[in-house]
Image (cartoon, rainbow, N blue to C red; front, side):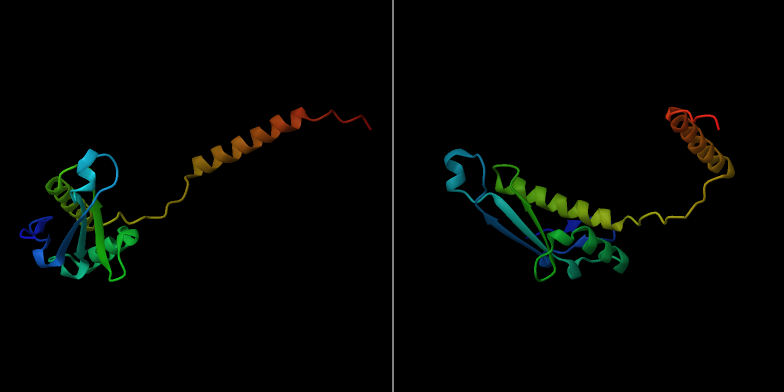
Length: 143
């Protein structure tokens, strides 16, 4: 790896934190599939990502929980094309998108209460539904 993965002006993955491994891809490809290693397995050391705030690093860990290996590295694979270089670019784009998604702080949820009108409307609908069901029953005999 010679180039870093630049996510924003402040956040980037340095080349030393990236490990790429090529292997044979599955699926169609004719005779090429048996000879050429086009599938890319990209591993990124999460601690090596420069400029990533700790809360964002934790969000990235949660976002990519199923993509972490035993050493805690992010594993991204790509075998979308029959070209090794195109698959490498695709895997780098996936890493860039994941880190960018982790940088977005989730909106804080503010608990809300239903309005008085909404409560009244809900109770009215329940009473109306009960009336409909009551009307379906057999009429009572006179006492």
